[in-house]
Length: 203
Ligand SMILES: Nc1ncnc2c1ncn2[C@@H]1O[C@H](COP(=O)(O)OP(=O)(O)OP(=O)(O)O)[C@@H](O)[C@H]1O
Ligand SMILES: C[C@H](N)[C@H](N)CCCCCC(=O)O
Ligand SMILES: [Mg+2]
Image 1 (spheres, protein in one colour):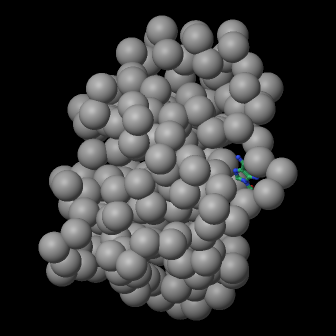
Image 2 (cartoon, protein in one colour):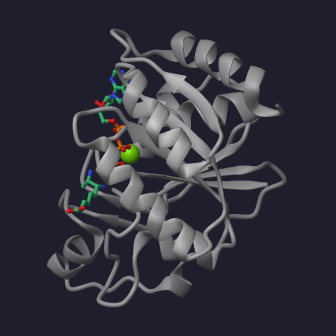
Image 3 (tube, helix red, strand yellow):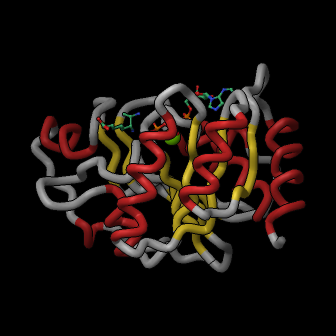
């Protein structure tokens, strides 16, 4: 099975959550579009300890840290949906998007269309800040209207009971993990949270 990690925006913790998922599932990691540095693949490599995971090459790597449609345009390149082909592997694959669901990859398509193109269900990272309820429910509304399968939510950052509760109620999605704000991020911490994730994964 493959998993498409998206979020309610950029810098929301998708790469950290992807590392936790990869470690928990001993899955491969693939970032189809990388815009700017550091490369998310390098970050995940540094956080994963198991020896089964393989890291697949990005389909597109752009120099500037911008929306993919703009980063591609800056280099006079174009992204097309059929550029994205699932890497060959016998492992599961955790695929990390770029930014949120409706980040454009060209004039017609969005990041979430890559998940649709690859028939991959979504894991939604919700980072907890004042404003995340609105951004989450807008995202959920889009995912539901477009019948995108969602496996669940990962809440990321300092917990907020009221925000988490209303998002759970309104979305109806399963909460896969509540990842707190971490003061240290390393392989051992990622392994700890990977084990925590596995405790609820099959519930
Ligand atoms: N729970 C957390 N505790 C502490 N720091 C965190 C946490 N989650 C994310 N961060 C930090 O926040 C920053 C942004 O997170 P991350 O790179 O995972 O975002 P992203 O959603 O992958 O962004 P992009 O859209 O660029 O791929 C990173 O420096 C990351 O280490
Ligand atoms: C460069 C950045 N780190 C991400 N990879 C891309 C974020 C695009 C966000 C676009 C937007 O929502 O305005
Ligand atoms: Mg990332």
